[in-house]
Length: 100
Image (cartoon, rainbow, N blue to C red; front, side, top):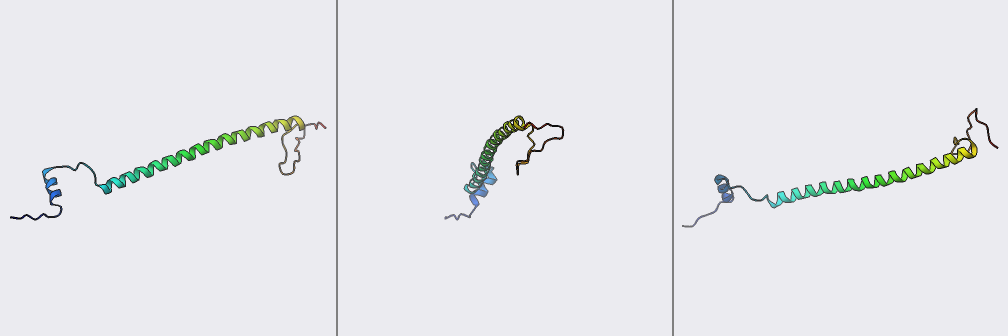
């Protein structure tokens, strides 16, 4: 006597016997791997941006140090570092003598 197999019968028999699958389906595995890969890529990009930001902050600190040195030079030369950066006009305070 020939037996006919009904689609999904094997799966149903396993369910009834309490047999659990050993692995997820290829489709589910692909989806999980893709999601984890996307998260890892986002972390890598965030790390790259953080490192770039860190480097820019160091560069900015160096530029601020240069400005501080220049301000000290201006105070020594002109008695003030209060200048108009557009035209170079010196803004003396009322009580400061000019060293000419």
